[in-house]
Image (cartoon, rainbow, N blue to C red; front, top):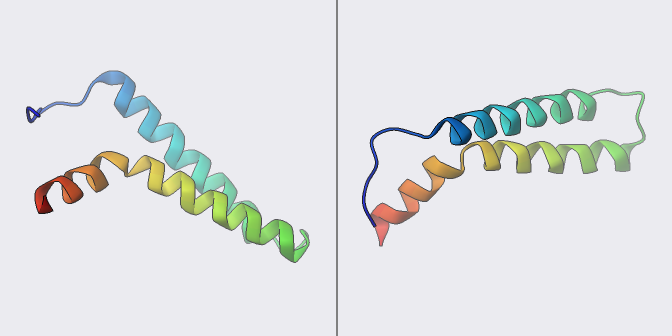
Length: 66
């Protein structure tokens, strides 16, 4: 697989969207007005959003080990 030095515009946009989605879910998970099970579900969604935002960094770290 070739190593690219620049990211495509779509990759940058999707990374920003995933990160902002993770922030929104994290903010909702910290809201005490929601029941505990909803807060846990939103927290899991926030972690998923942040993982999706960092997918290229995660892939490069995993790729280096192999």
